[in-house]
Image (cartoon, rainbow, N blue to C red):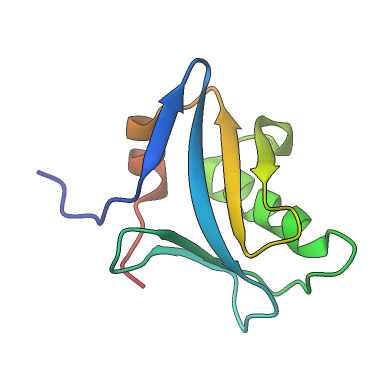
Length: 103
């Protein structure tokens, strides 16, 4: 059994949907799972003119080795809590590819 912490992701036809809590203007760029099972992202970018959203998409695309066009922000473009859709993935493959640590 894998001992990596799990986060909640919902499978939909052709994509997986997940919720991420974003902290802009962080010292480092990172992804982790919080103790409550939520996915967290820390971004250096400021939440100005979509810079933090673009940084989140870039961070996820880099960590998942996917093109940026496969990642879409469904809800929360101006909020810290964002709902993200990732095309062509399932929750199982997402967990395997991210392999995150506890925050």
